[in-house]
Length: 164
Image 1 (cartoon, rainbow, N blue to C red):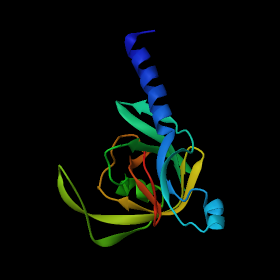
Image 2 (image 1 turned 90 degrees about the horizontal axis):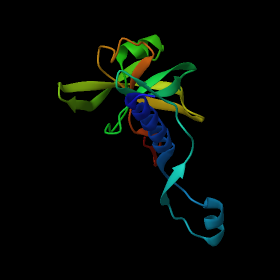
Image 3 (image 1 turned 120 degrees about the vertical axis):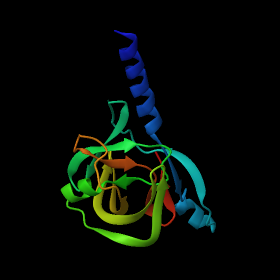
Image 4 (image 1 turned 30 degrees about the vertical axis):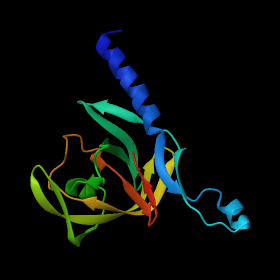
């Protein structure tokens, strides 16, 4: 086994273990707290599953499903929000709408943002429904059409955030 293969294997195991931990603010023990008359929220570190990770051309790709179609999102732990490219949204038959006053800013400048409704987003065994996901950039991020975009933070409900 070469040193490069060893590093990749180690990186893959480390990434899968790390991705298995997801930060989520949730109501803890709502049933027992309700009985005690308490209504407190705690932020906890919960392991809710394990995500598949594939390395392709030095890009960490998360195995995902969007409305029943398998593909990948590039893992971007620094992204405030995830995005889907316009070409991927078209391939996935997602309809987007412009969001007034919302822009993304990066090295390339400032662009307006559209949102598309994803009926079902699958990450490992976890599924979320009716997610409004940002859509931007007029080009794919790779020659691989199975790469839909970037995975950042997701808002599932008004008080719940999932972070990778």
